[in-house]
Structures are given as structure tokens and as C-alpha cells.
Image (cartoon, rainbow, N blue to C red):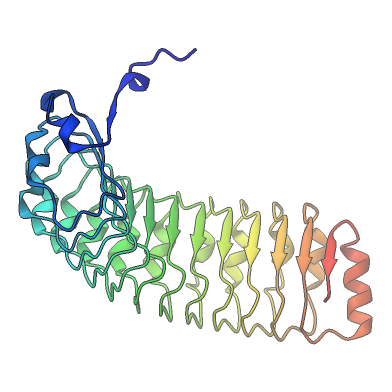
Length: 308
């Protein structure tokens, strides 16, 4: 039986009950309350650490949000919020900020002042660009910007040296900044369903990368340094315009899953025989002739091969 102090923290599901003992309230969950305005009474909860207010009808967050000095988690998902106040930067203890499924078109430049922020969730908005100040989030572990209208990522993203997960699918990205190669702790890179035509030459610097989702882009080739990703286990490259793979692709010694369907490949490098941990490879809808298929079947006999 877990007797840890954290398990004893009470969650309040109505403001009425919370206001009966305002100084004791640390977690307030007001999801699905059909709120159209941010309740002023919340600011009486001076010790509030978690505020969950998703799936309501909120259109704005008041500047007074900065009064919740002890707030560690703020979840505003599923509302109608168009903009965030610059005062949000004063929530100096904030570790998790989730504003997914709203109507944001931009972020305040001050967001970079949230020095303790570990997770930033912004998916399913209308954000066209991220502020350069985002690179100041020195403790950020996960950045989710999926399904927005981003055409690029700021160069400053390379300063997020603790970032482990970058999720940016479903945007309009045509390239990734070279600085992304500085993210030495990155284990998951999701940039599928964009318009990427190339990858940075130094992408091999991401030595902790385990999963790379790059499918449904416009990639014609992969940099040779990609073969230096010694931790890579899953590589999804289907529905691109690949005509070849790097000769040393077999150096990806930890690779277990490789999806290459719907490309323009007519052969695979000889080195693929080195993919000894490969469990599954998809080669659907490419341009392999029968002799090349036989060779691939022979050298990858330990893996399940999907030709159709």
C-alpha cells in the first residue's frame, strides 16, 4: 500500500467545494463545466498547484493568471482560446502547460520565461510560427506542436538541450533547422505529414534517437550521417519520394522496424544484411525487380517482409 503524501492530495471538482477551504486546495478539476468565462473565484485559491479546465467554452485567459504563483500544471485544452496573456510568464513554478485543441495563432514572446516548464502541449491550433524565445525553455522535455500551420521551426529550438520528444506532424514544414542536431537527448522525432524535402546533414548527431516518424513527406534522399543513429529502433519513411538509401544503412544495428512503402526504390544497399535486429520491413509499392526481391528475402530472412 502506497502511503506517500502525494496520494493524499484531494482533487476538487467544483468551485463551491473548493471555496469552503480555499487555502487547502491544490488540485482543481473543472473539465466539462460549460464555462464561457474564466472563474474569478479561482484566484482565491492561493496554494493551487494544478488547474484542469479542459473542454469548456473559454475564449480568453485573464492577465490575473499570474496570481497563481504556485501553479505547476495548467491544462486549458479543448476551449476556444485565441491568445494567451503575456503574464503567463510569471507562473515561475509551472512545469506543464497544455493548450491543445484551441484557436491560438501565436504565443506570447514571454513564454520563454517559463524556466521550469517541462512539457508544452500546443497541438491542434492555428499557430503559424513559434517565438524565438522558446529556445529559453531550458528544462523542456517534451514539445508538442502537431496539427498547426507552422512553416518552420525557430533556430533557437537547438537550445532545448533536455528535449526528449519533439512532435510536429501535420504542419507545413519544408525543412528542419540545422540546430535540431544539437538535441542530444532527443529520443522521439515526429515530423510526419509535412512537406520536408530534406533532412539536416548532421542529423547523425542525435545519438539517443530511438523513433523517427518521417512518413508522408517529400524526401528524395537521406543524409549519410543518418547511419550514425546507433540507438534507432523504429524508422518510418513510407510515402516519400526516396530513390535510394545511404550505402551504410546496415550500421543501424538496433533497428527493429523499417517502413519504406510507397517510394521509388529499385534496390537496397548491400549493407542491409547488417540489420540483424530487424523484425519488420515494409517495401510495398516500390520498383524492385524479381532478382532484387530474391536477394532482399535472402539477406533479411530473419525479418517479416511486407511486399504488398
